Length: 102
Length: 487
Image 1: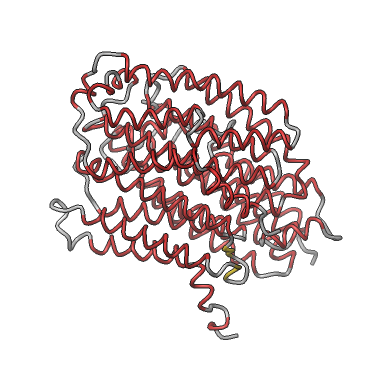
Image 2 (image 1 turned 90 degrees about the horizontal axis):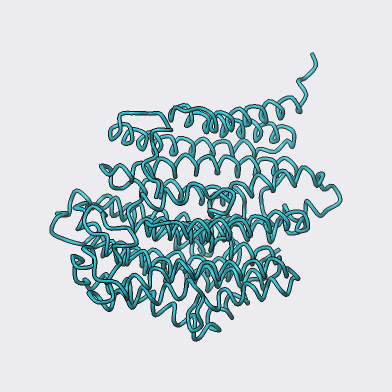
């Protein structure tokens, strides 16, 4: 049985990251934008794990745990912020959140 | 190996400021239900105690310079400089917060706890010597700042500021992290010194690969320091966040982000300098130009100062472009001078804006010189320092930056930077003219007399600005000595 080449994983990671960036830039729902950021972080995690496997070092695996913890903290804070925005404006469309212009 | 051989006393001493800040932050949250919150300013006082203790902790750490925790942290002059800077920023944020929180009827311990956590993160950023530690410090600082920006939950503008800060901040972090992952993949390490030896060594990864990683980290850090073309969040966030928080955001996290920016690019990625220098050159020029010209058009003072902070990030990037120890020292000096004047200016804005922060426009500053001569005089010192008038810290800051740029033969950048400073003088002078040459506005007449804590919050940075302008050698010598980072 032949192994899946390393480069495939890295390409997948890059594609997922690019999808996250595209989602961040083009989607209009705040929740989807937030999910795009999570996708970017997980794409990075995939890179870390792949490199860790390639380098035969355990450090990369450890880094993914750090990233996951940080992503969880970010999600907690982020969802709380999104909730307060929704309470005050009753909308989750990002284009409607622009009260500050000079 | 037993744990004791990993963690020794020396390591803990080098980590002392972060320990003190985290312990006090947690203590504040535990005390919240116990203390009667309406009757006292005990939280603010405790925060000041924590910050002053952290200053002593920083001094203790500096008495034992070196690396800690297997090279993850490094305590050197550079780290100590930025630790002291962010802690002083914390003190100067806490002082005007007393009056602010009382006015908004929002005295809770979370505000102060989050402030301490954010500063702990920034101290970690200042002393981290490992890309993962830098990432952790950056996130500790950022996540606490996101909440601080939205601290006034019922204020629509504060919500919006928090949302934008959070979304764009996390977006930037993801870029930074992808850069870290690529560096790890290419070199097998995240320790800055080891990355440096790996990319100059015999088995170096291809320069294109490292270049992509460097570019991703540049994008992430560019967002954090609000350098152009990644500055678009800054005006909205600075305008919407509660004013003392804005003061903090524009001084503390920015200085710490510049610290890691300098440390990464001047140690690990320094061998690639020829590659990244043009990028920083463009970013420096774009930040100065966009910041200054956009500030000309603003009528809201917070927004004006936000654009001015983008421009000032540009000046620091000029020093960065110089790619020399002189440039690093100039950037350090400028960040210290900038932090003082900026936080002082925002303290005045916070004082004047009143309950609900309604008075923020340029016209509200009219006649402040008549109504409150001391406040107006302090603001004048900060504005003159922004312009770069001699005898203020801003003058020597700009002087050293452009001197470093000329030494590195960046003649065009220097010329364009100086022209930019001339443009900037216009909008700062507009505030001065408004204060002294117009009839008092409603806001100026209604402004409360200065409380002792607020007077301290204005006078201390003003003294600092003048000291930096009259005896720049004190800080500059230290910066010069510490600018040669461990490579």
